[in-house]
Each structure stands twice: as structure tokens, then as C-alpha cells.
Image 1 (tube, rainbow, N blue to C red):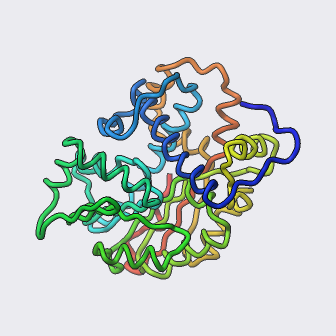
Image 2 (image 1 turned 90 degrees about the vertical axis):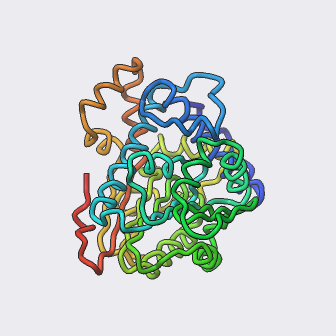
Length: 329
């Protein structure tokens, strides 16, 4: 980890800052592909979206991504079980995520699966889907009804949609999702992984408020940084600033309680937040043991510090009494 920067860092302009945020999508995908190649989990689709990393990723990074993927998946599958897949998923800032294809392989597709991201990222994802049969065939197989709509910035099938939109403007987001047959009356799971932290606290509050007021039965999963006011957190911030990547919403990442409070203040009935070390300890220990044997971890303390600076938060509202408030690790 780089040492702290000396002196103030120049602030990025809005376009430069958005470009840096888009770059984090590539970084995450490359890290996931590397971890998959080492054997941390199976994902035959990630290679269709991103090149193999030029250099090895550190074991603590690989374990961190393992906990992130499995932690989100655990909550998501609990939601699918409670709703018996009679629901929809909205993946906010989805990037090159492969969840749709993996859920189809497990026969766990919801009624409809939506992805939202910057139009530039959406265009790249759609290009990959159109040009790679392992990606396009499952979409065609799951499609029924009218012809499948696809252009450079959006894709709409009966089970899967990709929408190019800016999450900072929820009215525009809702309009685009409704054009793709979003059903506000269906139980809805919204997922945001390292997304809210790049929005101002007011913008993320507006998005959370919009989601809570739009869907009577819903769950929100948020994965991002936490405990960012200590020295380790400050170094993380400085490292990102050096790449012109500004964490506009970092003040909400000061503690687990602040994360939980944000959800409750913006219309959600129940909310939880736990750090990734606790998530890692809650995952099936036989598989944790398997992945710990894949690579030797020299920096145990660094791994624990890293995991204590990321968290999963989840919140629900449940007018149908499906038992969403009972979902926990």
C-alpha cells in the first residue's frame, strides 16, 4: 500500500471524476477474473468481458473479492427463496457483472433482471453480449414474446434488461426502467456494490428514498467502504484520489452505524450493517478452508484491516409479510 500523499491533491473535474469511476468497473472485473482463474469461485462468463490480469493479484485482494461475491450472493439467494423467484432484481452500477448468467445456470432467475450503468459501460457490455454466443444464447433462450430489442445503449428481453442511465437522477432512472417493463408491484431487490460512495450523500439519499417509496416490498443490498475516518481509511482515500477518483460520499462511510442510519432515514423499515471480516467468518467454513489453501497469505493483519474497512448493509420493507426482515447472516 502506497504511503500517504504529501500536500493537497488536485481535485478532478466532473468529467474526469466520472471517467475515474468508470475505471473502477474495469479494475473490479479484472480482479474477479484473476480470483476465478486461481479457483476462488466458478464463473465461466467473466472471461467474456475482461482480459486476464497482467500480474498476480495479492491473496488478500482475492479473499476480499471472494467474501464480497459470496456475501452478496448469500443475501440475494435468501431474498429469492423468500419470494420464490417471483420478483425482480435491479443491479445498480452493474458494470461487467455476470450474475444474470450465473442465476440462469442455477435455475434461479427472477421474473426479470435489470442492470443500470453509465451509457458508455452499457455500450461496451452490449457489444460483448452481441459478439459472444456464451453471453447472447442464454438471453435468447430465456426470452419469450415480442422481438428482443437491442441497440448500442440498451437491451431489453423478457427476462433481462440493460439500461444506460445516471443514478444521480432517479426520475430519469425510473422512466427508463419503466420503458423496459419494471413492475413496481413485484417484490424488488436492488443491489449497489461500491456505487453509493461515488455519489454525494444527498444524491445517494435521493436514490435510497426513491427506491423505498417506489417499491412496497423491497430489499436493498449495499457493499462499500466503512470505518474510513481512521489512518487506514485515510490511506485508502488518498490512494484513490491519486487516480482522480473522489469518494464523494465517504462521510457516510465513517461507521457501520452511519451506514445503517442512512437506510433508516430514507424510508427503509429494517436495516443491518456488518463489516466484511464478520461476513467472511459467517460464510460456509468448509469452502473458506478450501480457498485459504489456494494461496499462502503472509499479511494476515493487512487482510483483517482491509476487511474491516468494507461492509455489507441491507435493508427491507415488506408490506406483504414475506419475512424479509428475518434475512441475515
